[in-house]
Image (cartoon, rainbow, N blue to C red):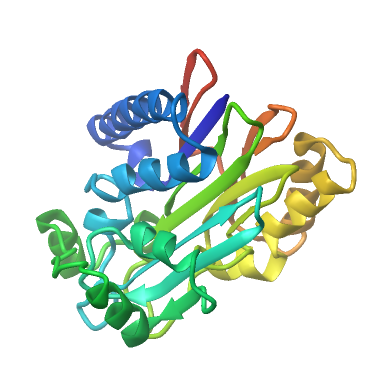
Length: 280
């Protein structure tokens, strides 16, 4: 069994050691709890559970801690992919929902598996997802101060390999902050979240760069074609660098290889495969 999670990029970690430690401690606790959950649940169930924990923590840019867009509203995107069945589902720009990853989970069993905007919200309400104000006091303060764009990068994600050898990946984001209304991130697309029976990958960074590189799907495809996860990731990041792309990934292969990579050395992540690893 293997589990890896990320909390996106955060430039404030370079100057704010208190924030940096808080995020590291939160990831340590969440990945440890997630690994215990994985012992009795599938990879698919686990990635949804773990991402919901990340969404509930206001330190991260997903769910409760999401960035505010240019019109003062929060819009959330999330997706999940089951490597065993190859089912993918997601929601894009849904408002006033606590856990978008759980709405994405429900859509796995529907023919129309990716919903956006009002349609996604209507579906959530019909399935008893109540009203939730996703704007935390801290994000409101940041929005009013119009922080530098660098502090607005990041998402959360999880990749799991269960005891049966099945893989799954889940990713959730609150966006980049101050973006145009209607902007679509990578997190609810196969560019940012992808898994099959060979590997699973979750991305963070600049959504447009990740979509342009088809990053998650590309890495998993290369693993499927015989490359190791490290080889597939390194080659994909070399290509990403040619256009100045900004991204980070976490991944697990069916062989249990855990790997992470980022364009800049301050993506925060944690992994558990019997022992805890935390890094930023």
